Image (cartoon, rainbow, N blue to C red; front, side, top):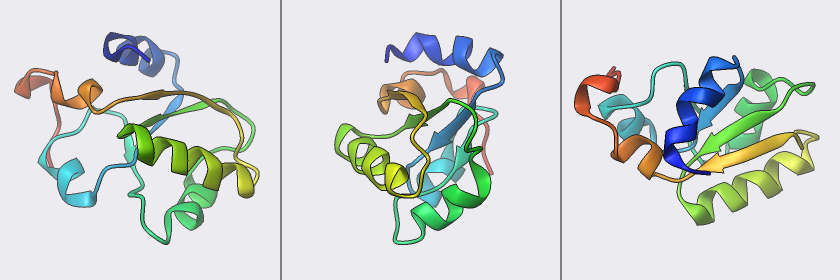
Length: 100
C-alpha cells in the first residue's frame, strides 16, 4: 500500500502491526502502531494482541510481510487488509516518529 495511506488507516482505529525488530521499532516508529517482530514467537504474540474479528495491517519488508500473512493465517488471523513497506516509516520526518 502507498505509505501516505497509513495515516488514513490509523484514523479508522485499525490495528497496525510493525514487524520490524524491536531495536528498529524503538529507534523510530509510527505512533499508534504495535511492534511484533518476526521471530519464532511472532504468532504467539499476534494471537494475544491482534483482534480476530477485525481487519488489520502490517508494516515490514516485502518478504517479511508475506511470511507474516502466511503464519497469521495458520492461527486464524486472516483479516490482513493490507501491508505497508518500510517506506511507511523511513520516509516520514523524524518529528513524526515516536521513540522508546
